[in-house]
Image (tube, rainbow, N blue to C red; front, side, top):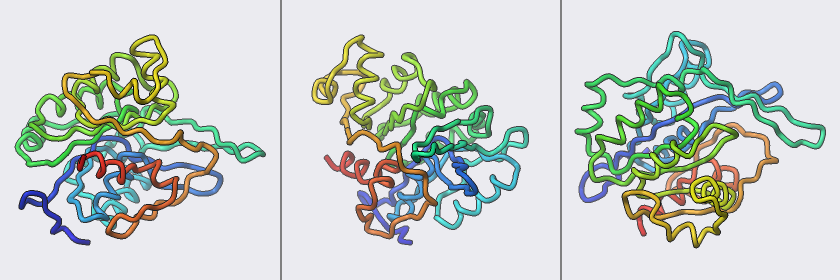
Length: 264
């Protein structure tokens, strides 16, 4: 792994906030969570990637920590929660192969807490970008920690992968997130959902991209609607220089769109 990638002479460091979890499908367990996948792909591309998350003090949590070490994701801001289990999603398949998901609640990543020293350290670090999503805002504890971080970030790119899941979002949550965003990623379905929620009208992606939704001028990335019929697969990171992999990995990690957005 090449940690020597540089931008303006400094090593590239990117901080990701959010869930790491196991997809439980039939007799298999598959490591994922969009923020974790992004951090792992960034690391495979030579970026020094950090993730802020929690795992439980359990066997699944220990396997997550092992995989972070193996994949080169920095664990400086990873907590071990003795009171809540590592995140999981139960995936059930119909006879036709269509999945349904139960995103289990009250899990470790819902209760991310950083102390004042950690928050100060993040504020003093020279991160090139900060990345976050929506699911990890569903519980007040993690949401409050995220907002503390957003309030102390300097003049860096803030990448919001809106990634709406089931009922785990609100107008207020999205408004706060957009107000801190410089790069927004959402798909065509989410364009319609967010425009209806925020403005009571359904806009297309071009109309939506022209709206001043937050306090920053930002770049908008849209993608094809997510395919929902494929079961999750065991994570296998690509090798540098970030090849264009399967549609499933493009959907889950968005790392190619992230790089494109940063370079525009």
